[in-house]
Length: 131
Image 1 (cartoon, rainbow, N blue to C red):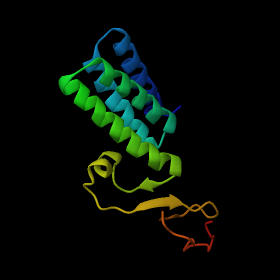
Image 2: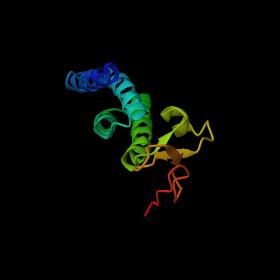
Image 3: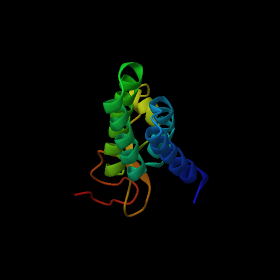
């Protein structure tokens, strides 16, 4: 298991444990870190877990923690859509969420594995036709 994957699991588990101990701010901090790592790795399971934790925090709190939890739900949901579609973007997931970078989404060609634009119908490297 790679370092990022171990850190992801550790942070999400720490978020769950903090919720059990009724420490929503600590849970939120760990969930944010886990969500960002999951987004960078395109890890759908990690993103789904971060969303679940954030929703629980949102239900239990108010004020700033509630607003931050809502932002985390939106961020991870946004990244989950891309991860499920197999789309990788050149900008960081957080920059994509904030729309800081006008980068174009890419996807790997299933035939030659080259990165091409997500909207491409034909791979410019090998001629593979997408359905």
